[in-house]
Structures are given as C-alpha cells and as structure tokens.
Image (cartoon, rainbow, N blue to C red; front, side, top):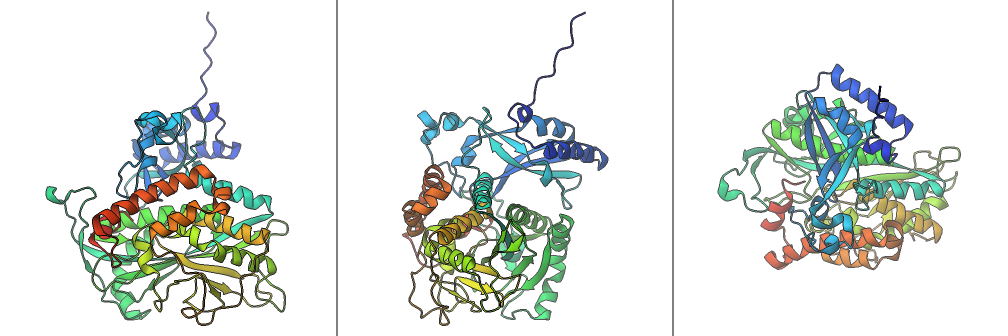
Length: 491
C-alpha cells in the first residue's frame, strides 16, 4: 500500500507569514464563520490612498483562502485617485524596475485574523483586513500598512510606543441623484447630487444635533457594533458637517480603526439614502473645510509611562519638546502624507480655525500643533491639526514618527508658543500638492524613514494626480468641479 501523500504547505505556511497566535486566531475565525452562519467574506487591503480594495468570496471558501491568500492585480498599486494607472506596467519592470510589478501580474492578500469583523450593515457578511505579498512570498514594498509597521519597529528600537487619538470631521448629506445615467459615467464619474441635512452655523447646538440624530443613529450603531472606541458625536459649524472622536489606541489599532471607520460609515450612509464624504472641502456652496486632528504621544516602553509628560514645572517634557520641533521642522515635506489631495490645501487659510504655517501653542486653534497637559499631567499629548480626513492613516502616523524621531535625535527646539498664529513669522505650509511633493522628494529625513523607493513611488502617483488637475483647471485657487468629481464620492 502506497504511503499517504503529505499535504502541501499553504502560502501562509510556506512563507511563515503568521505568528503562532495568528494561526490560532485563524482557526477561531474559521469556526466563527460557521457558527455565525456567514454567507460572504470580504478580503480587503488598504491601497496607497487609504481606500479599501479587495474581493468577496462565499463563506465556504474563506477558511481555505485565509491559508492560500487571495490574488489581486498589481496595477491596483499603480493608480492615482481617479483609478488611472500612472505607471507603464507593460514595459520591462513595469515602471518600477521590479519584475514582480510588470505585466499586470498578481500579488497576494493574506488576511490578518486579528482584524475579523462581522459587518452589522451587510447581512451575513464577514470582513478581514489583509497584508500584501508577492507570489514569491516577498513583502510588497508599497504596502502602506507595512510602512507603518516598519516605522513602529524603528520607534520601538528607540524605546517607545505610539498612542493615537482620532478626531475626524466629515459631511453627511441626503442623496438626491446618484448620477447613474450612462452619460454621467465619465472617468472619473460625475459626483452625485445631494442636499443638506442641516443648514449649519449653529456650532454644537443641541437643536442642530437633534436634526442629525436620526441620520447619525445607524452610523453610530454600526461603528459601536464594530468595537471602535467611539467617544463623541458632534455637530460642526458648517452645513451638514459632523465630527466623531475616539479614545486613544496604539498606532496600528488606530490606523486600522480609521480605515474601517471611513469605509463603514460611507457604506452605512449609502444604504440609508445618504452620502457621507471625507473630502476636505466639497465643491458645493457655503460648505466648510473638514480636518483630521491627530492626537499623539509616545509611551516609554520601560515603565509604560508617557514620555511627553513634564515635571511639576513643565507641561511638556524635553523629549516631547524635541518631538514637537521635529513635526514643525518637517511639516512641509510631511504634507503629502497628512494632506494628500489637491483639495486638502484649500483648507490652509488664515483665520479659519485651520493652520497655514508650522507653529505651535498650548491652547490656540489657529496653530498647527496644540500642546495639551499641565505640569505632571500623565495625559499630556500633542494635537496635530494639519491633516485632512482623506489621508491614508498608515502614512499620516508614520510621517509623524519619522519627523518626531528626527526632532528627538537632533534635539530640535520648537521655539516659543505662538499666541498670534496668523501673525507669527514661521515657515508657511505648502500652497498646493505640487509644492508638497517637491518638498517630499528633497527630504532626507523621509527618504531615510520611508526609503527612497517608497518616497519616489508615492511622489510619482501624486505628481500624476496634480498634473491632471493643472492640465484641466489651470491650477485654480477655488474648489473646482474637477476636485468635486475626483474626491467627493471616493473619500
């Protein structure tokens, strides 16, 4: 009798892609799929823009695909925000000087079992966030989740962990016309038509919140059902503008929260006849800009203490001050990561509760970075107000780590608090995406932190986006229909 044939190793096993704990968790996920009687599983990854892409499979195939991975085309990594491929993928090296990237070949999504969710708005549907690899088992160097993981490894080597709190603004509208006429299906398609849910201009009034309460209820319930650490729901000043805030999390958890939060809220809104947009400044009359304020601090791994907390005299430690100075020194080059769209730069306006230059203060909403915490306060932290809600969270947080670590290493001085933020002399933030990309290409700190290959890759994609904008609009200062069509429904 012939000996039994040895079962061949799966893709995950062959390349040793899971920890023992992840392997145990994968078995629990496979059992949960059966127990919860799921019918579909979504395998997703966050692309270079922080947009979820992936494939949906029937539940019976999910356990096997967790082990073997789910294949996707590498052209997804070569696209700008209009989903246009901006690299010559059918030439030698695919425009990347990499054999794996040519010819529109495959990469493999490998599920992170720790991210498993049952989607409360999609009946009988589960979800898994994935990391991405080439078929030879090598990590895809353009994986933004891996970029953050590498930054956190560097940070840990310096003795710190990163704590992040999310404060995210967005607009919520009633969907009037989804623009499904074939004539509207241009590339990119025409933005949907919407109407307001509130007229705005009553910041934090209970009456405006009550007008939005019924619309926000399914969104809030969905966010809470996913286990996100939601803290508050707030009505912003602008028409149909809202803000959600979250309790602090470790960096990777916070970034994963932001990725799923954006996707979940947009999907829930659409299923309820609404459109939710994280576009910074939609091209509609009377709307206000939305920002993403990233609260952050470093935790010393030795003793698990807040490295930013000062003594009984100082509200910010020396380490915190040097880190803050790093954020200011590299704000110009970091803007491609904190504000990655053409539209986001329309927010940098003086006297508009948004920053326009790289300065800090203790309690002033006109500055780029606010310092929170009294002397000896263990919750001392920084609030960077520069980001837009459409930013890729993995890149946003990674940029803070690399800039802050340079500030600590060089013992940079942040200078005095800016009590008159729009009059204080300081380096201005970039005027447009093109200026920000130029600064990124010239940044030695980010080239060392992200690597030359990633900086050049991301800069090329953003240059293509900016070139289309200038070619079609001439680079207009006001929000253009080009921006509205490009970003309104994408983010």
